Every structure is written in structure tokens, then in C-alpha cells.
Image (cartoon, rainbow, N blue to C red; front, top):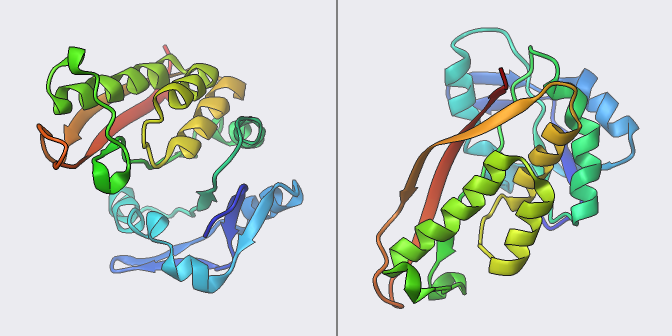
Length: 211
């Protein structure tokens, strides 16, 4: 589904092999009342895998505790809309009972992805990819959405979840508490050495309250 907005499910719950997960209709009602969110048709919801992939893990991590979820699919947003949604969601991250989960791969490199950026001064292709990814990761840790936006504009790094990441950076800019981001792991699916190779990068980070 292509959209330039953020989208909410029309379902009441999602089912996983570990059990059902109820959607928080109270929070959904608050978000719908802003007029900034679209609704997602059930057929689109059933086909959309980006949320589906995470639900079993979320259910497992919650370990039997009672909880509700607020699934939001983030579309292809302008910088201004990223900030708009960041402002709308900022108050929810200030509630210590809430947890934000933002998902993204990092660089998709190769001819099949139509992205073959290679600065040979940085070494082999896989070394260039890592340098490029880590530059973006540092900007995320700095928490500056404008710098992250400029980085994407300059290098065109094929980070799938660049818009959800940017929304999160704006959330952290506009919430009451001060947070810090720290990347804890980085991997590539393969080590590219020629233009016939391809790889996808993966990175994981934690967002915590700053001391």
C-alpha cells in the first residue's frame, strides 16, 4: 500500500501463533481524532508483512503480561509530515507504560536494488556499505532529524524504514523527557566484493531515558 500518511488498522486484534493481541482502541480513537491518520482496508492489512513479522516477537517478549498494541504503518512521508507525526506521538513516549518499536533494514546494496554506491577510498564494497550505514547510525544516535534527512538526500541510502526512523527522531525531539539512542549490533547478509554481489544490512538500537 502506497501512502503519504500514517495508517491505522481497522481490526480489533491481531492473531499470532502465541495468541491474540488486542489493538488499543482508546489510543486509536485519540489518533483518529487528529485527522492525520488514514484507515487501512482489511485486505491490505492482511497482505502487509512489515507489522506481521514483529507481532510474534512482541508477544513472546511480553511474556504473558497483559498489554495492548497500537500498530501504525508509516508511509512515504515528507520531512514536514514526519515532524507532524513526531509531535502527535511524542506524549505517548513520555508514558513509562508505553514501549515504541520501530522497524527498518539498513542498506540494500546491489544491481537488483538499483543501488550500487561505492566510494573506493573506503575500501571494498562491503566496507563502503558499512561506513555508509554507520554514518547514518551515528546521526540517529545524535537524534537530529534534519541531519538524518540531509544524509538520506545526499547518499540515497536504501534504508527501508527511513520514514519511521525519522518520525521517531521527531518524537524524541518533542517529548518532555530526554532520551538517548545507542546501536548495539550491526550485520550484513553478505560481504559484497563485486558489482554482481548484493546484500542487505541490519542494525538494532535501544532508546532509553537519558540519565
